[in-house]
Length: 101
Image (cartoon, rainbow, N blue to C red; front, side):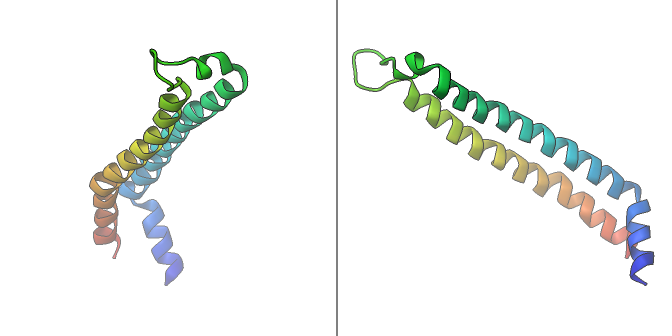
């Protein structure tokens, strides 16, 4: 019985769309995060002059807002993924359930 259910789910066009869309979207966001995070790490390693340069006449350096950007970017892309998952991916999952079961 379960083998039949698995085969029906795998052969469903909405399931195939869900898997391909979610996978490509997840890899795109992962790539963006890797670029931002490892870019920051490389900047820490090789761009110390930029990160230690003061902003204006105060005591804040460029390292603070750039590091804060990395943190905010991480939260933002997580929120974007959850927003899309709640809208699109959950609807596709519901369609799959109704068609297969």
